[in-house]
Image (tube, rainbow over all chains, first blue to last red; front, side):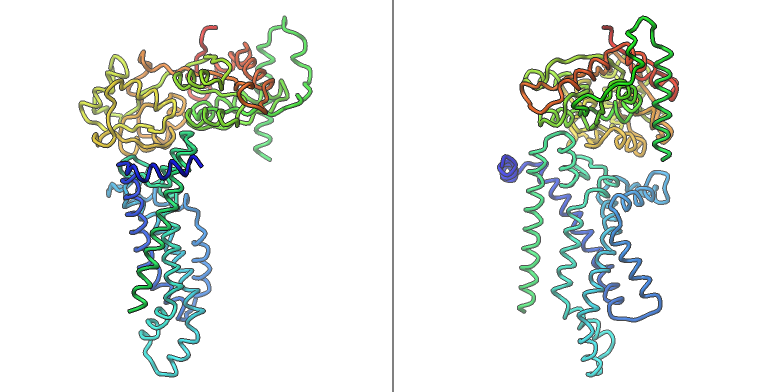
Amino acid sequence: MESFKQAFELLFSLDKELLQIIGVTLRMSFFSTTISCLIGLPLGALIGTKNFRGKRFIKKLIHTLMGLPPVVAGLFVYILFTHYGPFGSLNLLFTVEVMIIAQVILITPVVIGLSSSFIESASKPVIETARGLGLSRSKIVGLCLSEGRSSLFSVVLNAFGRSIAEVGAVSIVGGNIQWKTRVMTTAIMLETNKGKFSFALALGIILLLIAFVVNALASFIVKENADD
Amino acid sequence: MKKVLAILLAVVFVLSLAACGAKPVEEPSTEAPVSTPENAVIRLSTTTSVNDSGLLPYLLPTFEAKTGYKVEVQSAGTGAAIQKAKDGNADVILVHAKASEEEFINEGYGVERIPFMYNFFVIVGPKDDPAGVNGSENANAAFEKIRSSESKFISRGDESGTHKAELKIWGENAPDAEKDSWYISAGQGMGACLTMASEQQAYCLTDKATFLSMKDELNLDIVLNEGDDMKNTYSLIAVNPEKIDGLNTDGAKAFIDWMLSDEASELIAKYGEEEFGVALFTLLEK
């Protein structure tokens, strides 16, 4: 109860640092979701609509990567971008950019896996009808994507949810630096480590509120478009 | 299986060491197998510097074999370690932040603060020491050199004992992580901060034990050792049974008594010599 009160007090006090942390969190989640979907949705559509050699193997691989532990993704990216690593000269370690890279590695397989199975199940009747009408390949893919729009929308939200809730990878590659790479989840972890459990919970409640607002906004926008 | 064997070997080794050092005038009961106490689990809430440095894993087997108690160690920053005890999740704490400890006692959570050992914080930094910290009179002077040269400095920023010690060294005008871009508040444990300092070639205040245990992976050197303002005192506090119920008070007392015993003192004084070539903790005069 104390935490709920604290959460609202914090939100309405418009604490400068809290707003900055929320800003970094949203920026990171927006870019990692967008990039993962730009890569993942077309690949998911391809796998969902096309038959090719090795498809089973690729699906297995993607399903395995969907379960990739965030710390492992973080560690992998850390090793790539560490000072003496292959990309060390870019000086990206402990920046928001490298946090986005780690999250894209983590989330893209989820987008591919979910979207391909949605499209696969939704597309069979569409493809049969489209073939009957003699439509071109690209038109069929477009049709499948628009038919499966609501499930694809949930894929995007799923990606966003995974991004905003993730802590293992971003704390390794971002370093939880105040005023720079601290996001809501790593701030919660920090407050927990400090022993400020009720404050940490208050931050958790704010994180949930943010996720709720983003979800509501997104479904509002999608509905608007659907009405056009 | 290997792990079990290793632990057994360690226990045997430590026991034989203890047996060698035992004085013949002591009560004959030291050799006798002990019966397990009624409430055998002691919950110890402590900081990462005593657990992750290996000190507790080195000491506890002896205590456990001798008394039949089992010590469950939870390690976190001093802030969290104390909060866990306030929440009733620990019987005894071993921490290093005097002001927080006194507050813990004053609020009635702790019985008595027993300072018993200390070590020194060290300042580590890039091997070429761009701020010229080496040879500073004390940590405060070193910090001011870092400030005036705006060399990067990694702060724990997590209200741990080390973070509080750092703030105390800065004194009145500690840097502001928002305005001073060279001052990086990492909000992570000692190990993560040292790794970050090595990556960014920054300075960092650390306990010696953690630094020495990670030295091989770090591209850093100790630039200032043992200034008069770098002493780091560790205390034991039993949680007060009048304030919190369900405590293992007998266990906490047995643990504290043993930690203050000659046997434990000898073990602590020797700790680190074998692995790092230097003792990591010094006992306070009793």
